[in-house]
Image (tube, rainbow, N blue to C red):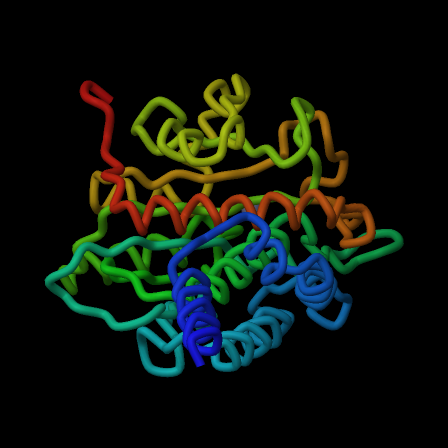
Length: 313
Ligand SMILES: [Zn+2]
């Protein structure tokens, strides 16, 4: 009897641990390389026609994402997840999901990636620009991280966004940032994922952060996962901070809003080329990055680490 009781106590302790501990091994088990590959190859398939609105491919990719969110218990933040906008007379929409409950009195953390790419372009040979690295890869990261985070309870509001019309000038992100501002969402910080499908020249399972010195975000992430977030001189030189969706949230809220990427100008020759295809990416390393990002986010959220702008920046 005693033995059984001890066994029962042991079992319940174990299930408690599974609820609250975010160990790397558990995360690797949940964020599988098979799923990374499956999402990436689906979003970058020729059927998705380069994921722009005009080709209808964006709508198809959005339907896939919507189904994924529904399947994994991520609730719509807006009706049918959609935040609609019109760009160049074409209606498009960001997809916005909510992990757990949303309480307007709480701080909100946002994870995002652009889902769109540049569609079909006239020319010789392959005309479908699949945008595997840019940005089926970042979209895959947001979906897998959301799925993981949705299995736990959080004391912050947690939102995820897949943006439309990034390639048309960050249109989707600016639309959502303005809307969230007008709705008084109390945004604490935003983390964006762009082109994480190749291995950073400095090493495996690493990314760099745009606007590295603007906030303590890189330092706090590295305090959880050593050496995960690098500084890339070219990111500063080319001002990449202003060239992805994170920038819209910095502009609207003056908060830390930064992008994680592994495209360092030396490790991929197919940026905005028809050859940006899933087969060219390092899915194993991409899966490592997604797992580490999920682990890092979970720790930052659980420990309620304050992410803030650096003084003078
Ligand atoms: Zn991009």
